[in-house]
Every structure is written in structure tokens, then in C-alpha cells.
Image 1 (cartoon, rainbow, N blue to C red):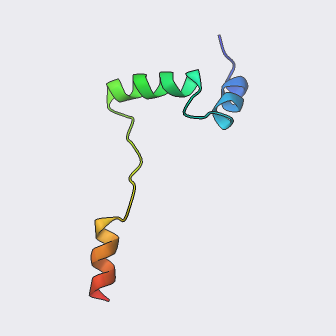
Image 2 (cartoon, rainbow, N blue to C red; image 1 turned 45 degrees about the vertical axis):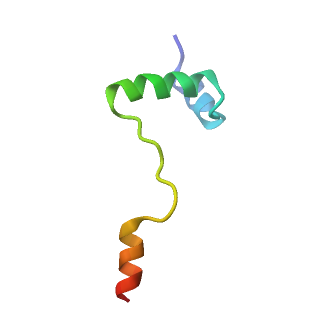
Length: 52
């Protein structure tokens, strides 16, 4: 069993290539909780800037 403090330390140094990241992504994606970060301009921001 992993302690909470050890888990926190692993999360702080986690990268996309670590086993923990891959396991979290796979399991949370299955449950619908993993969302890829949006990239590029947000359409709401673009529309708000046009109105100004």
C-alpha cells in the first residue's frame, strides 16, 4: 500500500511518460473523468474580443 505522502511526492514529479500518469489517464478516461486540456484560442475569448 502506498502512503498519501509518497503518492503526493510521485504526483509532483509526474510526467506524461511515468507509469503513474499512464495508469491514472487510463483508469480516469474509462470513468469519464479525464479530459485533455484545451489548446489554442478559446472561442468565447475570441468572440468577447471582437465585441470590444
